[in-house]
Image (tube, rainbow over all chains, first blue to last red; front, top):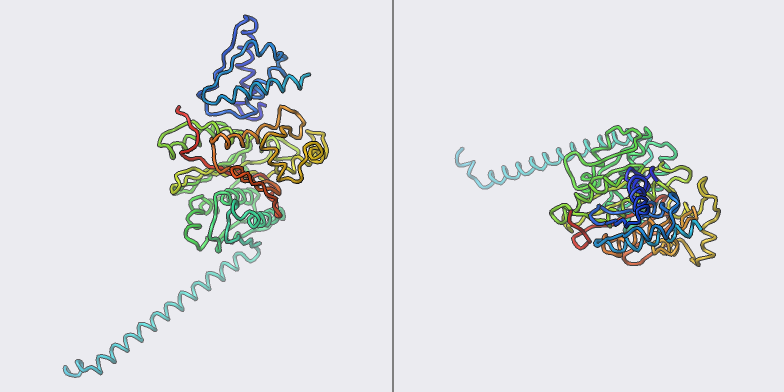
Length: 94
Length: 355
């Protein structure tokens, strides 16, 4: 949530992730998201950024999975976490 | 005459006279000192006549003497709630840890920002006294503090403990503190994503849950201490909100689920809050009072940072539970802690990345 700081997952999704993913969906291309090189992530940042694509931006799980590739060499478990957040968001919407 | 001065009897008499004079002088100065001390004690007793005296235990270690320190904190809380002028008596403290220091600092600021008189005595033990002075406790004791959203406390003449307090999530502060910590441990700045995650999760926890009625109402307090002996950095985080279990128990305006812990205990079979905390940290119940499956991953995320060796010596004290996550020990407390306290360390064995 934006009240959770100026670098929240919501802000990231609204200003960066969703616009770029939307463009990739329209072009039928893939968005590669590299998670390395940052100070670190809170779980709610990643959940809000990715799960929010389904809950707030009304994208489907299939659309997202076909058009993103999440990469992390430093913290490979983050990729699994994001997949879980997307799966949970889909279940919640259902 | 010359011969008389050299006589043994005369010499011995002079020696004896000098010894007696020196003894009288010592006795006189001792009496003067005693009178001075008595006068200071009387003045102090007079000054603190209407103060509530809260006496700290000898072992003021929140991690190792939790029950006694919780009792001490409860007495301070009671004085605060009753708007009493308070004197914290620290004379007999032999040991003090960073957890207790962050609590003392936050309590001091709370009293002062409420306009309540608050004072403290020095520990007689040199090491305890040095630790407390290095935290900035005494240099801030005589300063005026208003009710602010942000505090930063460090000793005026340098020291190895710095304390921050805010009401919101501040990832930039986390990044800055990690840079300082990593420079201390490795000699240059590094990224420690596990520490950053831990800080963000705990700040978020305070922001979202510490106050039962309103988001972002309670301060969190974070003390960062640089341990030159063990070459490690200690982080002590505290908020004086409702605590993890009281938050689950009490319905708020935000969530309409009542008696959630009772319902959870039917579904997930735990006997007490110690078992419940273990299940929360292991991710078995990633559901918060909102009942939303996608929430509640913060605390498991902190425990995972410990499993992945991104942080070490992770400890929780909240409501009636004390947990040593590294050792897998979860214990019930008779004297609860009203809030959430988390402690962890960073040293050269923990995961880090170059910038």
